[in-house]
Amino acid sequence: MKKRYFIWAAIFLFNPVVSVFDVFPDFIGYLLIMRAFSEASYVYDNAGETKDAFKQMALISVFKFISMIIVPFTDATMALVFSFSFSVIEVIFGIGAYQKLFDSISFICMRCGEDRYVATSERLKKFTVFFFLTRVLCSTVPDFCALFLSNPQKEWMFRFRALFFFLFTIFASIIGIVWLIRAICFFKSTLTDEVKEKINADFTEEMKDRQSVFFSKDFIFSIGIMSIAMLFNIDFYIDGIEFLSDILLAPLFATGFFFLLKKGYIRIEKHEKLLIASLAVHFVSSILNTIFTMTFDKNHYIGTVFKYSESEIAYIPVIIATVLEAVSFVGIAIVGLYLINKYAIERVYENPRFFSEYSVEGYVKEFKETAKKRFVFSIILTAVSAHCSIMYVFLRPSNDAFVVINILWAIIFFMTYTYSASYARDEVFKRIYKYS
Image 1 (cartoon, rainbow, N blue to C red):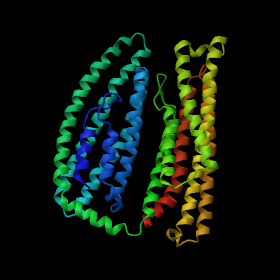
Image 2 (image 1 turned 90 degrees about the horizontal axis):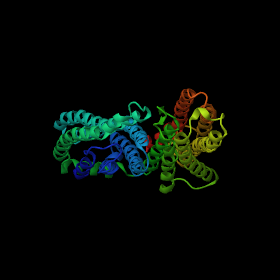
Image 3 (image 1 turned 60 degrees about the vertical axis):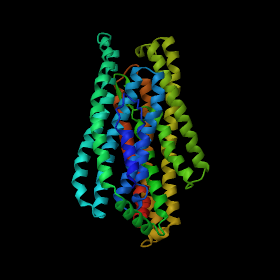
Image 4 (image 1 turned 135 degrees about the vertical axis):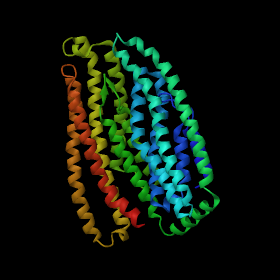
């Protein structure tokens, strides 16, 4: 745990963000924190949880950086979509990540005989949460001025967006500078050479014959990423603006899958090829769906569909793209969950010593029975959610309120999919990690 990693990370994280535009990309700071915990994570459980939490934040930040490239080619409403979506996700995962960061440092200080820094760590943790929330809110609130564009009588208020960004950026900068100074002073005083030597000695001792730790943690991380990706299936709208873009679902899911592939834990076989094809179709169809929908809404009124031939013809590409997106989504969900369970069973056979109190065949049989029940349940909810997405594109011209039902089923699907995917993670990979 070298303090220079934490100091450089703080420098990349203190600066204010304007919408999704970040001068010093956050993912670099998160990667530096992960690097700082690289050895301690294999010695202390809470340090490992902290590293995993910042893996998630780094991945979120990467996609936010990609959106920063896309936004200049779109309008203010799409900027609001990206800004709001990433803000919600960052708050959900970021608060916990920062709390774990300082909890881990406090724990390590106590283990290394530096109890006097625990109180300081607790105070800085509270201020860090305040700084983080301030930074996120200041980057997003001015974007809501784009909602005025949907009302001709209030459209003039959109001009205040730039002024709000200026004022909020100044405020966020002041809080950020104060946090940066406090963070640098804290890391310099706590992460001494003695602490680093103690962690290195513990790491050398603890990692003897524990190679299964590596692959189990990687699978746990990958399954988490795949589950998070399904969150973007929820069509959350405000004033006709989608705040969880389907475009991000396939790339995020693919990140978790190709992470395992790059590590050499899995091979490309029949089902893997089917998953890759589904991801590609979903990504392309979601982009086309967004483009077709925006083009239609710009040139036609949704209520005229199925009434005038010109509007009906213009709406056909939206229907086709939606159907392709829904079908490929079903493929991703079903094949992805099947592969997660398949990889879990393979690891049980490869590491029977972690299931020594069971008959391995008996454990696998029991695992398959429970996993199958959850798998079938998820298939049903996947089909219902996809069906609702297709129904919505047909009902939108006459009953836009159907979007509420669509969102409800998407949320239910997300909960059940996470519930199903977590079974392999908790019963196999976490067990291997625990007893490694």
